[in-house]
Amino acid sequence: MIHTQFRRDAGLIRRVSSTSASQERLARVLATHDCGSRCQLHHGDMCDPCCLARLVAHIRPDEMYNLAAQSHVGVSFEIPAYTTEVNGAGALHLLEAIRLAGLQHSCRFYQASTSEMFGKVLEPVQSERTAFNPRSPYACAKLFAHTITKNYRDAYGMYAVCGLLFNHESPRRGELFVTRKISLAVAAIAAGFEDCMVLGNLDATRDWGHARDYVVAMHAMLQQPTPEDFVVATGETRSVRAFVEAAFHAGGMGSVLWQGTGLDEVAVLQAPHTAGRVVVRLSAEFTRPSEVDALIGDPRKAVATLGFNPRATPFEQLVAEMVHADMVRLAEMRAPGLVISTPEQRATSSAPAEEDHEMPIFTI
Ligand code: G4F
View 1 (cartoon, rainbow, N blue to C red):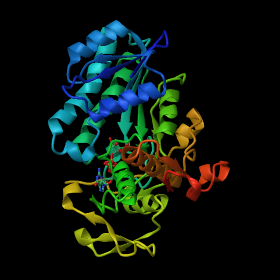
View 2 (view 1 turned 180 degrees about the horizontal axis):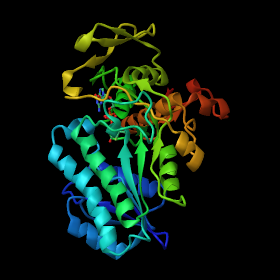
View 3 (view 1 turned 30 degrees about the vertical axis):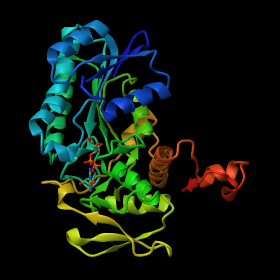
């Protein structure tokens, strides 16, 4: 995404023959925020440096946010060369495009670096000073992008910064990332569409925050007097297992009990009317050749300098928001116009009690 001095926005979109889920997601975002009129999308590709150079020379941006990526860590083991092209060389193409257009002293550049670069961590809590130890083609490519961004800052005096963002989630998260996979599965199980979800490593821990809070920090990074890199994280870490437990709780299905070991481990529901139902199974299909076991970030620099609030969205609120959004989506698919409400909405609403509604209501 690019900002120009005329406060018009521009974005890059890949040409595909059929409508993809990500295009639909983008269309929804543009429609929701009425950005369609001030945001122009241009066809392009991170693997095509000529096209990027032409676009940057034409648009002449004053801020550029490089969030483009093959962003699935697991998939990067299957398509490592493509991942490296897009995530690594892609950043270099953009930096060169800025320089070739003569914008190196006017265009501010944001590179989406990632906590995945810490990999097999060399310090228990990771900050801007922690050394990197990547564990996937995804993270290796991102590390190249990170260092080349710093190099362009040093070599050409560019305002080019890296945001070391830890996992940031929302109801818009892609369906193959673990948080969204879980929220969607919990909603589907609650609605009776599915019986069970299949996951990989339950014991990996991540520092999960809300994407909307992190985007504010990204923007703030480009408004500073000097270009610097920042860690953006909550400073709390939870396991995939804990996310599953919180999601079933948010979905109104009570607690789960874990039984068995290794890949035979399962989660069963505990509530009286569903007790004993297996709702999580495991499969090696969703484990990775080399895993990042535990991540937790130190956001103190971002708090002090950017005014970032790591407590803006507590973990339970994030999980509940994702599960509820998926329950709403599934209910809408099943019966358009279905009324969904949260306990908070019902507490502040003058609407009649659930049983008085003609239409069914899902609650969380
Ligand atoms: O949700 P994940 O796929 O996210 P991951 O690998 O932490 O990466 C995400 O966050 C990074 C930091 O911001 C980004 F750079 C990156 O682009 C991406 O957005 O997996 C989280 C954890 C992993 O340990 C994984 O092994 O969940 C574990 N997991 C367990 N079962 C699973 C599954 N991951 C996925 N995707 N699917 C599973 O079934």
